[in-house]
Image 1: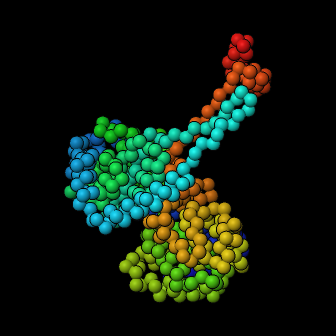
Image 2: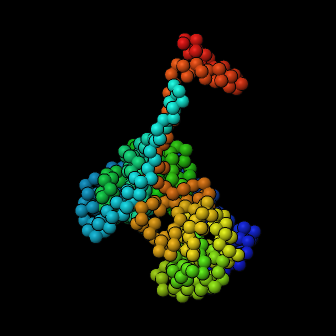
Length: 442
């Protein structure tokens, strides 16, 4: 059988369900490492960060030769703006038209959810407010080769532009000829990005975080990558902001016997082809469970990536049969999936029970690929159970808030005793004096 069926009347007490949940939460880095375990990846990344910090552009050139087999020089690390314009001009007209439609959808959604500051809170002569300003600069990592996802460029860059970020730089690994994928360059030109670097792997993250002779550091780094990129982002966090340390993509589907088994199976297989990716169905219907398992087995061999899908389903796939829909929703909250699909007779009732999910897709006519490519919300989502405390990347992640306080003299005098009392209790006499000196002046 291509996908296992787990019967768990109470999924929160099921050992089999707990093992699957823990495998998904623990597999984010190691599942994609392919070159070694977590400790080996961390050591390699630490060494790369140190080399870039001390060696700058020359070290980036050496690392590009070692890992990408590309012969670069410090002067060719950056793609000339003319090459970006040429790639956009040479791009397929149909592709650029599609990209423009997607960009418009993303931009419209992001502008709709952009945080606006409320009117100041007025308490007598006290004015208390908040101010939102964009980060000054953002670095976007764009994978190359087999993992090239042009859609992720749009899902990361457009929200930053909506937020008002002034400088956006792209890093993408070169091929052996030293060139960045022309699709990346074409989209950069379409988006108005003129700063693109021929850099891949942990060294790209190091260069964007710390800067070199020719690359100015950024304030935040976003974008997916392999285990080394993910670990590099984790290690530079604090020096710069990051979006997340994302792991394998995942979907959890809550469905009842009104769902179409063929569609549910297709949705599971769509996620499994990410390689690695996880795909889970939770249902109170044993009939649906068996029908979906049969459909997965029938549909899988016809897929070009059947081998990868089969391996993912074996490791990170399951159909969990539970007592009822409330139990299914409880299981969904426990998994806190990146993508949650709800296909039931009453989708809104299930939605009301959900607390933890990155993106929620309601109904049989809202499959995950709509969110992956087209609808508008960013597909950069929390994985590995982190939807318990993280949300999707959005324009608001590129904003920072500043509290704004304004007192007049009368209000300062009215609050002075309380502030001095608190400062004294903490033993911070200079704090108290900073208040008292103004009270005496007034």
